[in-house]
Image 1: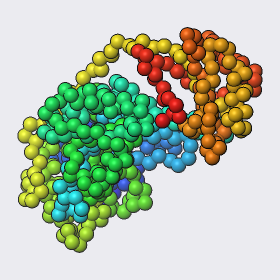
Image 2: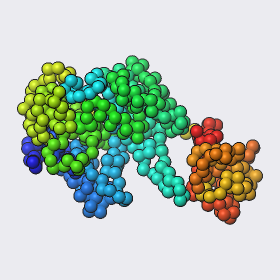
Image 3: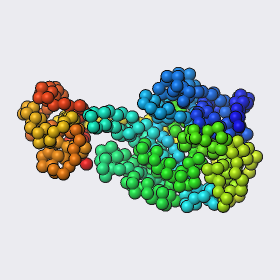
Image 4: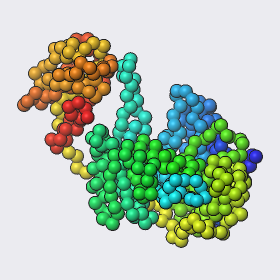
Length: 493
């Protein structure tokens, strides 16, 4: 069934909030039709501007999947309700979600996940967790290179401003919504500088919230415990990639990824969406679950201060789930009463507006918490930064010992070759013969005692390496900051 809402009906409402809407690809138009209908019926006051993004725009030759008119609408309204989109297969196409999040500075991704037992099957009926994911940095910076015939790299970027903002937002969210604890997930036992910074900032900022319980977990065991005992978590804050993975795990553990909505928050705007993809395999069949987008709409209404409509809609949705009116993804004979399609589910929600659930916990938004305040980052005085050497990354198909001989021939009395690693494992000096090596080598030159290299002398070193036939593909300067090395030591661990 193809349904198209006359979005002009929203425009007659007084003090309507401008919002940009994109119907998306795959099941997107179907679930957006359902979501807009229930939003209108709930009394939401929205002035809608529709834009086209996604697959059709990609096919027009815009690699980001979004054009200037759409950007203008997003910047004008500062509010975006987005259905899932499809990124075409093959190279040259950018992730539209990442482009929008980073382009508009939507640094915080907030994903609440709740169990609806016994009406939606789950092994964890007490689950009620909110994942706050950093949205702009980490490996999602998308900076990748093929450096040698055999080796590719992706840069992991973690900044103090980005980390301070997301950690403080997580604690402010917990405080504003009455949450009892915040847990930080990182892998700082391995990535000691990047994830180490995230953990350090979590501890620093957490000290400012004495009423909130704080703990840190390594991501692997944290994800395992989230899957096994999600009721032990309240708010989780984590870098970008981990947050993307664990929020999908959490949604599936709770019952279905089709039930989860998501908010993307920044200083200059906010985007609300379901967490699932465009599901082209079921597009046009009228069976997609619109719940994720409907609940994203509830989050949007709370964000803009329309608490009454948010509460009315959320409770009608809960009553529908409680009455066993379920789409195929959550339908089971044991817990469901009626199997319905996308638009029939929306009809059921609309029919229950004004009702509250009888067994599930009713939503209470008498006073909307609205937008969590986002403090401006206060840049601190820089540390003393001293250049102490350089890592030179080399393409080489010989032995570490032969490479070392060629490299040492370029030494100049200021710096000396001290280390060669391959994929982070030390292979010179005193490497193990069993270590498998690719054609990509990190070669560390460090200042000799009492010597002070500078960028010019390091450039001259590279000139000598080139003259010696060394195929270097990348360099990284080594700095200390207030005397503390700003680089991994030893075997790169």
